[in-house]
Image 1 (cartoon, rainbow, N blue to C red):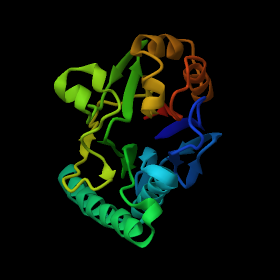
Image 2 (image 1 turned 90 degrees about the horizontal axis):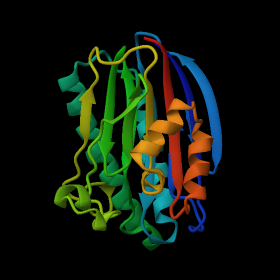
Image 3 (image 1 turned 45 degrees about the vertical axis):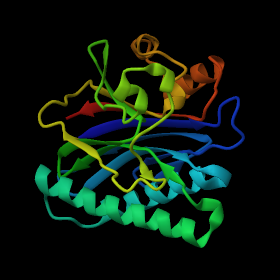
Image 4 (image 1 turned 180 degrees about the vertical axis):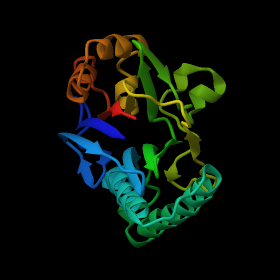
Length: 249
């Protein structure tokens, strides 16, 4: 599989620090942009992930980086091939581990107490493709000029159907959430050359509508350009965007 990937993460116009972070393979991106093209073989894992941290004095920054560091280590292990059921089971072992790690870090340092983060990721495992979601960061697929949200927001607004609750999430990693869960979905055969996957934090989707995003992607907007559009719309939050173009399946 050949992927063309670009990522960008910005602090926005209101926040003083950037609690978002993106992972592309081995590379972490915060307050920066990055591009790469990768050819992924039929063995091992490759991960692209985005985390939107939360939690007081630098806690969000710490949480998002800890989660992505842990995810990078986990996906770099030399796993044997796993079917979807085994991969899902393994992901829950990892979730339990990282939740404990965040809790312990908060215990050691009061500045980090209660910190947490969302997570959205695209993972290739021995040629099988998955998306993972925890929280309200999103993954979309752009195909044939149409944008479709694949993930479901784990948010109060989505649960209640009342968008006045934007920003209140009901599921995350850390932040004292003792019943964290992951949506882990296998693409199966439903991914093809020409598809574009968009991973983003709510700093983008709170500022730019799905209709606007679809129009911008039709115009081949880059990750950096989408961050700029969010900033121009008010930039109330950190904005992080990762665009994955499937060049060859």
